[in-house]
Image (cartoon, rainbow, N blue to C red; front, side, top):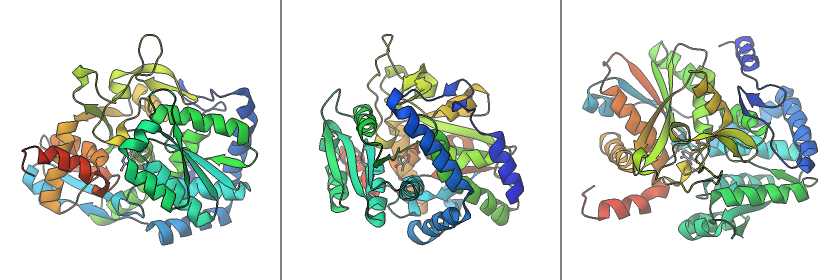
Length: 408
Ligand SMILES: *Cc1c(COP(=O)(O)O)cnc(C)c1O
């Protein structure tokens, strides 16, 4: 795509002035945050138009993150399945091992530009906390990460990682001591500290302009993949797929492909099975409500309380989804699929055995759905899958499962 076409495309897919994508999104935040959110929006747009800001962002994406990441034709896996070709976008090869750093580099640079000396973040499993602590160390900014007490217990190595990087991890005791409680605490901190502090949100959620900003910082994934696909195969894929927690790796891959004639598929975590109620499939099984400053599909009970979620992959264990994905689904531009814990584990094993790649358990959900779809297609068709992260962080989890009598 030429730069002009790219720009026209961006304009077609902007939220309205209140930050709505269709009927979703918006800015449901405390009165005191309306000013700071407007200031953030103005600063974001100014930086986006600023060539020197973009040049610095690009330099860091290349030299620090390791972009462009390769597009890899998983021929051995595809042959073993005997259907469509599976092509992987290798976000697992970025610095810190997952796509999240594309976003924290962008927001970190914006924080610097706005003169903020302190950044805060919320984290569930700790992966966004680590990505934030990483750039805070590099940019020499103070970094406080809110994390549920229960999550800190379950994810002790990531707490240690953040501390090694110079961040302070603040335990959150209210509620269930998990991600949604950490989100609330981070927003509360920001209400009191927005003069000096930049809140780095970890996915395409939060009040406007966050869903838009995070999409733009991750769009590099789909822009690269599109160009690489044309160069390596002389065509575009038939299907593009990504797993969905909050939806940032999915929006990053799918947004730049949405005006092409390509099926777009988001894969949600079905946990123990959609019928058990123990899953994190916000679009397949949820309904519209407000969480974290925006209107979107949520898993909540009839009293509006957020349900407990379950997924074997910590990164998909989120009770909501980015509002733009909700809108794309409503508009019929996004197909949904899901994979259970077991299906993700089988996909993890299969990629390891056929290609010598250990995928993150999150990414394994997208792989599981891709393998299933590929087996119904023909070898001349192609499925692009976002391999959002590497699996090293999941070895403990995988070991516990395969250690229980099942041979890896
Ligand atoms: C956090 C994470 C996800 C889920 O987050 P999204 O915002 O939905 O992309 C997926 N994969 C990996 C490897 C992650 O770390």
